[in-house]
Amino acid sequence: MRMARMFVALALLLVAGTAAAQNEGCYTLSWNTCTPQVADQAFTGPTVYKLVLSATGLSARNLGHDTNLLIGPAAPDAWRFDDPGCQTGSQLSIAGSGLSKTCPSILGGAPLPITQYGYDPVSKFCALRLAVAYNDIIPVAATRYTLWQLSFNHLYSVVGPTSPGVDCGGADQGLAFDPEFVQIAQSTGSLNFLQPCPGNARCTWQGGPPVPTVPASWGKVKGLYR
Image (cartoon, rainbow, N blue to C red; front, side, top):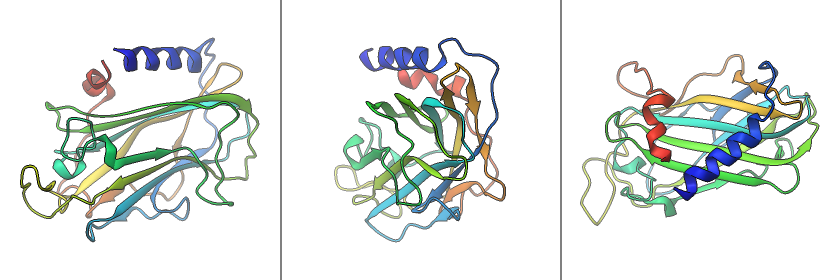
């Protein structure tokens, strides 16, 4: 309940006085780099794999951002980074720091990050909610900014089925990573909904799901944050 209340408080902060939605800039989800996009990552063994969410083309003063990332379909034990899951939350590291000098952090002063990784046993999708509020800043449109670095430690991941209490199976299963939304909270009260940058492909693991899938909507996974 405490986490749910924190999300509600942050949501109220981000959308307080919300005016008409804006559409400025775009985002890129990529493996290990901000740009150019690396859309697919193969499982090469027990190590850390990093997803980077970045944005460019932003110029309006802003004071936070909010993203919901869906992972699926049928996320296996190797991707159960929720606390009750095989990996547990200890194997996932989330940072809003800049990936490099050419892809700095967008964070203003006094950042308040609130994040949660959940799993829906009905849809079998994982959902990673990523929200942060900070003292407002004015970004530079020509700069690409790091929004999040997501480091997944697959030390215990294996190909094939899980051996309970030993490892986490299904690392060879193809998955897709779909941002349901990436939004910037502007200081004017407007929400800026970002679209994928031109030419960017869907971000995948092991080549992606075997057949096209429609990701679960936020309405289906919102119960994860109760």
